Image (cartoon, rainbow over all chains, first blue to last red; front, top):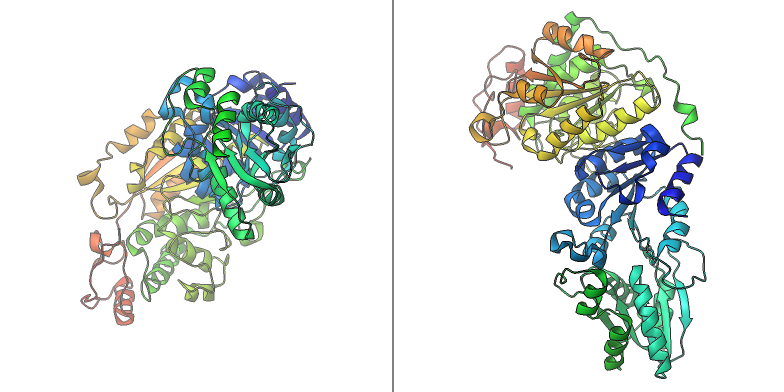
Length: 300
Length: 302
């Protein structure tokens, strides 16, 4: 099943669901025929789309809106914060090509502060699926929830074999590691690379705890705290600026809970990445599985 | 999931249908309430007085909404997009029984929600505003849903002319026309001013009706202080669009500070915080008397 098939099936079950787009149809191209007037394309008007979604939600609808992550979370930010956030309306914001997935588009299209922006809005949930399977397992919960939600869209092939069903605020523990080992915390499609790094580190005799966070708001505090308590080093890995993403979230959680640990960020720091095809971006920025393994080993 | 089923029926909501002859007196009472909010911290009095007749006219003669039908999905909606003119709305809601009149005495108090911009803690306020350029988009969503359900109710939005500087308004004008939302009406309070300057001297809007028509809207122009003229232009839009398939715009020509010659069209009296004595003088002026000379300093708050 694809994303659009899953969304179409949900729309068939729920007459409150309205699908909107700011002229980005790649992942929902067959829905206009299927949904008729419940598919609304407003053209390249992200602000108006979000405002109109708030109006639809006021009338009891659950709008699922689509646009490129950079323009949805930044061009329309104040509409999200003011119309959706203040009113706490169940608008579902689907951001395409977030992070490295913008590939060769360049910095205009790089949403690498989207997590920071969206989680800063009270009541907003932030979901970051690792692959299409996780996206599809999260989708019914996202639509069912009465909270506003930002979905960092990713429909890539399986990153790992998933072990646990999706739930808000529940991380997936993919490898338990050992007391005194390394804990790797990540989200989104990078899980695929981090899993490769984990396998390499294990082969080198370094025990690794691997946590796929899945939702960054709410965050699984217990998963974060237990990783910190058991490990000599916690590494957060994300295609996001260092500020406001997973590294910040983990730091906030550990300080609040009073759990001391050594915490390191592998992220984009404070810079935009070199635009190129995805494989080349990963290689250039040092985010392939082997490169990640080497970077982590040097930290030990 | 069938939450929508129960609300698809369009209920016949009676309008208030006040006599036209009653409206000047009602508008005067609303203006007096606005002036009385312009002290003890103050309010955006200039914009409130320019749209007072519009708000009074819409709630008295046009909108099919009453205090009893505020939650009825078949009601007409009014969105106050420019927001800072909310004293006109508070006062109208108080005069027409949507909120207790005593609540206006709570203006700016932490114990109530009667503050400088609209919010939904005040019954009758459909959505919060204050950030300019938002509520035409929100109204599009409401109008879309009404159409999806086959509803006959209509969605009205009051925009400020200064607010039309915001690009998001023009985005929404485009989108509403593209979606053929002919259950949507935008009324522009054309008082000729932004916060600190005349619109035509800062960011000229004219020819405004031609601009709106070129965006695919029908457009009429009306004297926004003349209830007979408002009746002639807004009345027909109560139940049907001016042009089928097109959203309707009405440019209401108004005067900032209307009713108080001593502050009309003055940029330093857009937001005012008068002394109690000045308020009494201004109330006399509203009723045709002479105001005392204003001595409290003019304010530039934006």
